[in-house]
Amino acid sequence: MDLVLNVADHYVLTPYVYPSSWPEDGALRQIISLLVVTNLGAAVLYLGLGWLNYHFIFDHNLMKHPQFLKNQVRREIKYAMTSLPIISIPTVALFFLEVRGYSKLYDHVKESPMGWPFVLLSMISFLLFTDGCIYWIHRFLHHKSIYKHFHKPHHVWKIPTPFASHAFHPLDGFLQGLPYHIYPFLFPLHKVLYLALYIFVNIWTVSIHDGDYRVPGPLQEVVNGAAHHTDHHLFFDVNYGQYFTLWDRIGGSYRNPSVLEGKGPLDCIRRLTAEGKMSANGANANGHANGSGTKSKEE
Image (cartoon, rainbow, N blue to C red; front, side, top):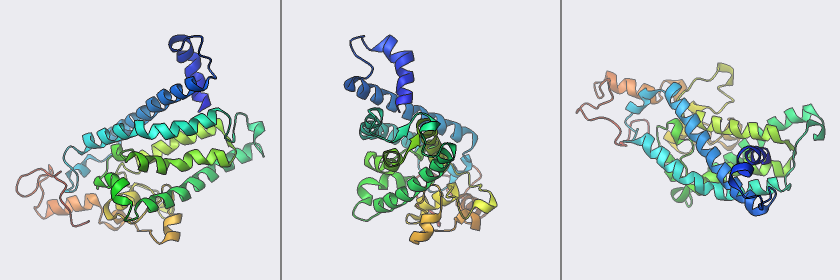
């Protein structure tokens, strides 16, 4: 995060915001700057990626589904934008430790234990490490004594849109993001790669909520995409993984995506339309628009 902070200091904060009596390496200034940069970055990534995905990838036919809620997109955005500033507080504490040099992040490839091969290896290990950690954290959040207090708000969105990607209870959001921040304190990682992976994580999080169920055939058994994650929202205790299906298979929670079996949300809409229970515009047989949160046959 010091790379971002250095750019912000050089172009904006030092010349236009802080008085000269506040040194760039001052702890208080760094904490305030990290809070501002982190919140702006989170908002830009969430709203920017969400908007692009919603308008160019997300299948709007999903909004006809009986379990799509009234004003859902607005509610997802409101919930996320309320939670992100709270999530940023403990996150900034970890960023501050990184900036102060307590992590194993490094600037140059020559500082890597094995040069470029290690840089590439660390990318793979980051994905595997965070995928495994998030699986167990996610599964822990589904424990009956915890679920209703922290993770249940995210499962309100049975048919999620890209804007549901960050619509978490603050503690839920922080815990599921924690492995990304723990990794560079345990393993060496190039700073630029860390920043790139951080952006990738946000892109991926949006993508598994976008209703684009296409996955190349050979990868369907390995990659935990939107088809898998949609079933997690619909059926609750399956497909906890973030990137891969590995831990779901090990943990006995893997479910073959209903989309691939012709039983997905869009199949439900087509079936209800064919049976005369829903019009082409998504209204039910009584003429009322869907979006009331009623249960479908898929739940």
